[in-house]
Amino acid sequence: MNAWIERQRGLIDFAVANLDRRRGRNLGLFLAYVLVVFLLASVVLYGDALRREARQLLADAPELVVQRLTAGRHDLMPADWAARLEGLRGVTRVQGRLWGYHYDPAVAANLTLLVPAEGAPEPGRARLGAALARSHGLGPGDVLSLRDHVGQARAFIVDGLLDTASELANADLLWVSEADFRAFFGIAPGLHTDLALSVANPREVRKVAEKVLERLPGARVISREEMGRTYDAAFHWRQGLLLTMLSLILLAFAFLAWDKASGLSAEERREIGILKALGWDTEDVLRMKLWEGALVSVSAFLAGYLLAWLHVFHAHAPLFTAVLKGWSVLYPRFALRPEADFAQLAALALLTVLPYVAATLVPVWRAATLDPDEVMRE
Amino acid sequence: MIELADVHKTFNPGRGNEYRAIRGVTLAIEPGRVTALRGPSGSGKTTLLGLIGGLTRPSAGRVRLDGRDISALPERFLTRLRRDAFGFVFQQFQLIRDLSVLENVMLPATPTGRPYRRVRARALELLGHLGLAARADARSQWLSGGEAQRVAIARALINDPPVILADEPTAHLDSALSIQILDILADLRRQGRTVVIASHDPLVFSAGLVERVVDLRDGRVAP
Image (cartoon, rainbow over all chains, first blue to last red; front, side, top):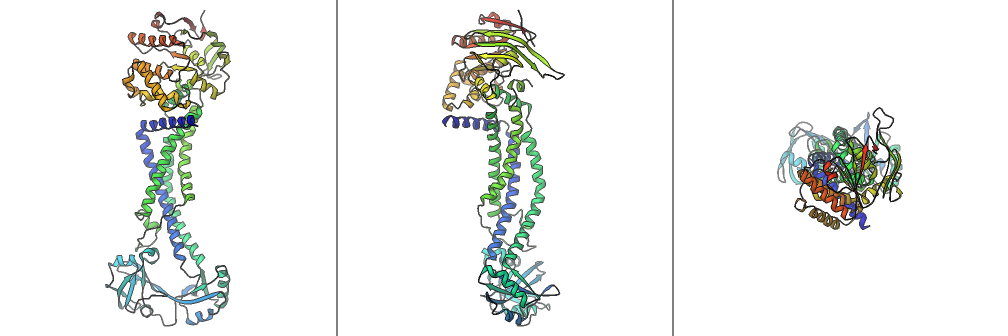
């Protein structure tokens, strides 16, 4: 065992000395490698963290949302529709919701006005999402003025900001009272945007949805599960788009790495011949080169992954915000929760480390299986 | 005892550039003596040295070391034999650039798994014995010809092999340095090692070191 360790130590010593001898080449390769792992890991870490965050948010969403459709488009919900769902077996609560979008030319962005189920502000007052507050430069006590559906200016006194911990969901939110909401959009009493249904048993959600459609044939029923899939699809699509763009860089790196790693110079071939003449096994030569490749690729992988981690979870991923977060103007600013995913780490490592190590070993194996005499004579 | 029985070596067989370097050499080299292979350039000295030391396999014939046929050994065993039984001193020194003198000397010991400290101590002892203690940390490419040849000898001795194979050990040295190297080889002979030298340098044959001369011409032992 000791002899084995001593042998590995000797091989590692030689591998490190070799890396040092070709410092310029190896440093260039290392930096390119770090950059690729950094970009790849940033996209994967960020996309996954966003999906996790979105799923977390959905945990508080109602099991079913019922919307009215008129000519295939979302329409306001008459008051009696809620009454028609009361007493539906499995449904514990039916609640009319009020929310709507408003285009604010001041920041050229859409705001979401919402009447919360609980804790709505007093009439004339509003509570703002953090991104919205930032874009208008508003704080508690300030006045936010918006034009309503007839173009008349309405002032809201800001009485607080929404929880920044869930900024992904409430970045562009504006909480208002029911009276203000109806007046702002001109929605008559009794009408709602949609209905939120609470279902006690998650296994009954699909059945309840069918029953809702029987009672309200003109409705659209959206389950929480479907919302989750939509989020997933949206983030997957964006992540895929970004990865496609990055694939060009990956491809360029693959060519560079293959060229640098697999191209064995005459000097390197001669050295392999010398080592073999001095009593190094083909296996020893391969192991030494394996250490060399592993030192470059594993250290570059760890450095790239660590940088990506810092970029995503500490610097809020400035490189990918525009593509991955998806808000057109009001970018939420929030810290994503870091979570170690070993399967993801292993997949990234496999994608980046293995091809490199393989690229280094093939030509070395070819040279190392020749007679030392033959290699040294070349 | 090293024995060669009707050994042939052909490079690139069957191709347009086929070259028969050794053509039926039969030879016995006694242990504990200094044997020199003499002949002009292209006579097959280096190839024969390589065949004796297991650097390459014969195309035909047998090479035996102490009665054991080494020409048919699997690669792994042949490598072990090169490591343990033979110390090579190559014509072009064949030191590895940018490694220090000490690192170069320690290289053959790496696959043995001997403790690093012991190998290092032995390497320093050898370098001290060959007058190179002060050059242990120097890069190999900074060495003079004489220094490089002595480093190559130290490297050949690191695994304490019973046989030293030296290919043109004085080829790139002036007369004074050549005599110094020959003295070192004589010292190895006194330690009981078998020394085989391939050379066409008259100085090697006039120094009184060589006990037996084998003349080669066109890949054959000349009568």
